[in-house]
Image 1: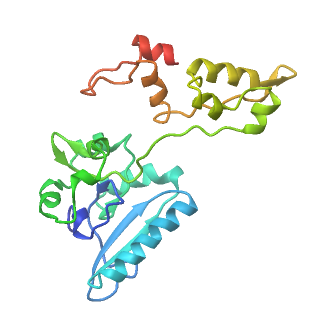
Image 2: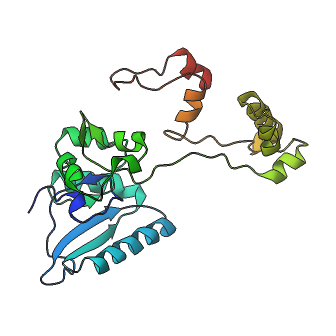
Image 3: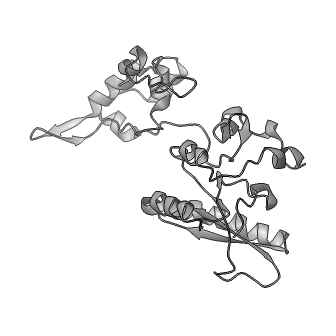
Length: 239
């Protein structure tokens, strides 16, 4: 077993953490360096990643990456078991909820030197916060793969039925505010026999709700991530 095969050794930036070891089991072609990449996701997302892996394998004939998929519902448990038993894949997607604790246990390879020596890696190509998620004490341990803006999707039919103005039209006039959002959600909520039949909005859980907290001047953690700010004024106001 080899510990910590580097992410940059095979150029898959679509992974957050490095695991340990890769055996010849699982159909590794003779004469190739074989690596495993493990991830979870919906069928469409996994197909995109599968296409990336197949393209990489074609472009790197001396290497072979085997793509291992695990259902999201059991991914965390399987990942933890594999890491602890030293049977984890060489590259794996790791949720940022658990990344810090896993890094502290020494499960991931320090890729700082590899990144610096790789001509294909340019930190300027990434949003700073995307790199920060995989950086601990100035050292790079993972690359962010699922990073982007959070959007609000709305049902225009529900807005029309409730006699409400279209949010995008309000936005263009600078009138789409949190107060307007809340009032619209209440207006679209419908009850029948004392129970909600139609909900005006569905607010996702952590971490998707963090921008809402921040919009009200709150935070969940201090900048150094060593103190909870759940009871802070802005955070309480958001919730």
